[in-house]
Image 1: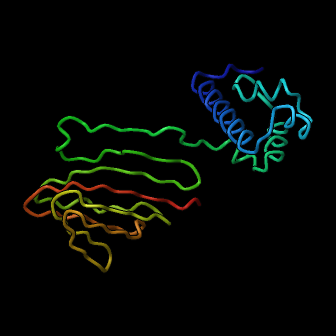
Image 2: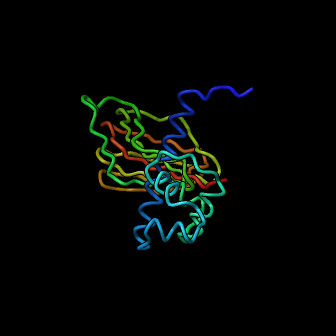
Image 3: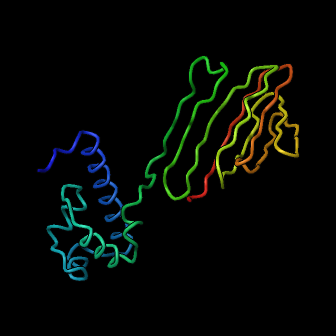
Length: 190
């Protein structure tokens, strides 16, 4: 017995259809192909190709694989989400409070997370690590901070940056003033 797909599943399927539709159309047009020409090279009807590009069809993996091959792309590239418009994240009112706010994150091949943090004056952050293959990049927006890991310590001021292996425990220590830091964590796909 088939169970109905939940709202989250329907939203994910709709999102994937939109991604494939946009990628297929963009790549097809960039290659200078008409739907008729794509139909001839794939053996897929022009009507179905049109429905796929409008995001209203549920094509099989076989159909999408044939389309990807005809376009000179992999199936994964056809289904990979792309940023087509800028994503803007506005400042938070009263954003000088202590804490970290994730700005952007990705679950794609190169996983990353961008955060903005405020570390209060006279604070030693908890020791943290981010897992094997992680790299932490920090940019000091304002204030001064000491960053330490296993056998190194660096002093950073406003405008300074540091990059280090995030898989080892590390701490941030502030002095007499709070520090605003922008952090990018990247993770190898394992």
